[in-house]
Image 1 (cartoon, chains in turn yellow, green):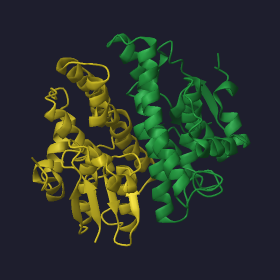
Image 2: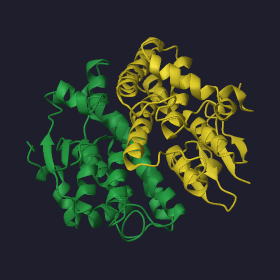
Image 3: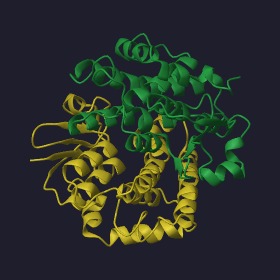
Length: 214
Length: 214
């Protein structure tokens, strides 16, 4: 059985849950409690040398890390429905949108970084939230511009079926809302996220639907 | 003519330069001076809504952003030599190694983040360097562990030809050395980087070989 080691609130694990659901792949989930530090225990470090989640262990024992690499692996092994468009230009666009979230927003706002800001730099709650919101605004401003001006955008980030870009966008918007970011300047993001969240695959992947949701 | 909009010291532009060279693709480079803020001028924002580099504009006018998406596009359009292994498991490994750098180290240490730390949070030079080195150590510890323990490692990060993982690793090591990080704990990284830098494609992509190098 395919096993997903994750955490209900981890955006990266959330991405992989969406991909598994879109592909209709049966899997078990093992929660790794990030707040309790379970990601740094030997059992998890054996799977994930960085002490992060998610990891996916396939039914033939392959250990996979990094959410986008996992999604791409699933897409290669289970091509339907595809997570990337059929044309090279479209694929480049979807990858760039996904990476805008995965390389420019999320890495700055995940738990270990917020912890460093508080524990090492002594930031108070307001300064931490200002940091969080700064990178959301920078990233979402660009995303909103791109999604509004580019012809590739449809019901979803690209065309009328969900892609890797939506898989990254939905968890990031969820996370931003959890940190009470004002998203009123992003009607295109909102429209697309609502469209995604109308689908069972996205609904079932939502943090509050996971067994470890507090 | 394919045009690369970059900056000599940008790790992300450096990745794309290596990929272009490995593929033997003729291209022109247009420097965007990040220190002078040229990335935020309208000309650059039209290509890159985030105000970042690199962007690649292909000879048929396609505008591409995000370094890994650009590399992947080049790999799809010009398959030889391949930047990813032939097997799905190998591809997943290479992507995970590349993303460990591109999603977990580099985003925390690039210019706009260091600027925020100094300008908004008032960090002094020592605290800024401590931040920089903290994420290098976290990331490189994991990379060294993975590259040492996994059988896939060869002369390069994966096997005996350069892949997307090496394309990410070399600029990150260059950057770490520029910030005077102690890399003595990473003999495997060092060995692989030396192997890469023996190749003309990597040498020609080095920051100090670019026309805008100060």
